[in-house]
Length: 151
Length: 183
Image (cartoon, rainbow over all chains, first blue to last red; front, side, top):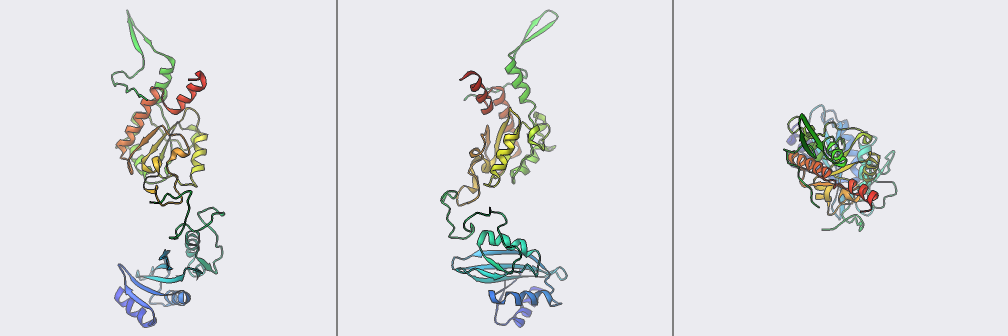
């Protein structure tokens, strides 16, 4: 399916969501409560068949976090980007580890560096930093007077 | 600190005393040992980021640092003479680097290759994880500028290290001399 066709399809299925053409792929934005619905639909609909989560990351916008999911269909080779707004005070979102196995490692890294709690994750603990590390270094308000020299 | 540059016409330290039927080489033992050591330096396989790619390039056929005696890169610190710190050293890597350095047999030499190993380079500001210069962890003999340095720059650093060893002015040699003579 081409990008235009994909946008039309997504607008038809999720009319209340914002769907625009990004730099490369269609981008669908919505709130964190709809994540599992959308993912389940995208993965299980036969003509979409988004069976590969090739990137999962997070952006700190200071007012909120945006979780970003890049999905690929290995059958049709089309892609879609999901942008999910998350609360900054209580950063919680459903884990995709049970839908895409690769999310398990991605989500541990995001938890490590951004401190987002993934509900239902099988093994949510720090992956690269030490266990006793305090804080989440990729947050915009992270302070570390010992290691960080500010410019 | 003056590093004397050996002219190519004098490859062996000392002088030859011509006598009928041949000659006698006059030299000091220290000079001969340093000469021998400087021409057989085995580097440790150690690369933490993109500088390692340049180091591999310097090791391969086009630049070929084995021409200068950096013959075989050793995969174990116990057989290596020189460690080329090729890349960023992060806080988690620092204890590993220290341990590798401690496992190398004396005499040992260190080259800090590139901006990251010299000072933290592009990661000096606003980073929580990078050591601002490998010399916070182990003593460095030769620093190479560049991000990453070209293979020619690394070759120059290796030759500089050889000259330093021949002059007896590496940190290791100065420390040994101080321990023996107190000066």
